[in-house]
Image 1 (cartoon, each protein chain N blue to C red):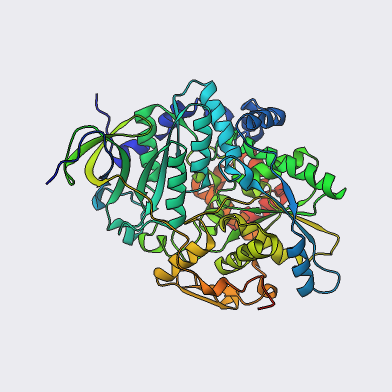
Image 2: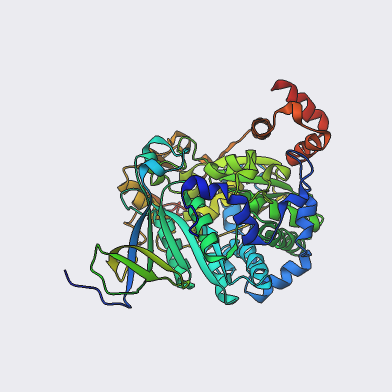
Length: 467
Length: 93
């Protein structure tokens, strides 16, 4: 029998395809129309933090170095008010097998796929996760298919994603290259159904558990290097998995540090627009993922998303493309580390924040990513110019996404700007009401929502009156 | 046209969805364009550029589409020198 492969028919089979491709039944965690047993789901995947670390050590993942960025700290102190300029540390996640922290997520997914007897893995991602899945699949002798959104309708590839395609192929994966559009998910479902491979979604409990080791390592490294705990951990935020996993690992290590999310502001650009696609110089770590995923995590490609940023973040800083490019160049020239710009989003946030914090405070930037042709700030800036973007030095606050990239003239201009996290929480609640009218919310739903936005019931009850 | 022999590493192209078949939520500009897929693999049977062809991909599955390229390769680079960033981190210049 030939199955109907039309868009509507495949999307209608979504839940069945998901269940078969993960061996995970989300129904058992359901506690209400909105509520589900989040901790139960995370714990049921059967891995302790020790298991995660052990699995990752089998495939060249984890135990990445932590470096103090003394020259950058010094430069920040020179432009900061007297007594200000926190110490900046960076965890060099580029040292993982595939060149980014995403290897942590893929490592657990690959282990599960192998244990459950799947012949291969599939992931739909234009990010570093593709190479991570490919690298882990290669080590566990699993086949691998990565689906990428890579070209606009003129066949022009985003240089960063072209490089990521190359890296996936280098690890022996098949890369399905697609034009712009949310139908990536449709293609993903079709390919899962056709092959019977494991769905290595970024948002399963396995994938998020994999990042917990990062937060755990980070806390212990800072303790042994400084004899203290970090005050702020700055996390580049896109889909929320990096933040969720890191924060959970930090909590497991007894950390009380503030978790600050940081994204590149790409407001004004539509993520599914063919024309906007190549008018942005960041393909991840930006608000185009960060905001929609924070305000409704369950838009992910799994029934319930294990990555839930608002549960864990304390503040949310936005930076501009020009600011990140400045800091990326600074990292090369002053610290002798050449790393990919998207991974330096949180470093840019840290530079902005450090000058407002006392000298004895500690900020940890929890990732870096590899760089190379296409995936380099010079490639991105050169490409932006070719796409007609005005690239210039100036006041970074003057940028207009899709039209200009303004690289700061000096370090003191790097400030970023705060995103109102209560506004994000309200957006989450608005989205929840769109799913289920508030009159139908049970006590379990209300408690779940309050917890999911890191607020108490009194706050939620007040906010619910507004809508 | 010259036929490409079986076994060569090639790229095929396929329209997955025509503009009319696209997801309802896509923005206006994207909705005007077809949804295109490109996949590389080993050519199963000899074919000319533009012919319908089947490839065996690195994951071992067979995919069909129009033969578009022989020995597809990468040309991405570090780009032209961007002079605007050269003095960053070098206050002495």
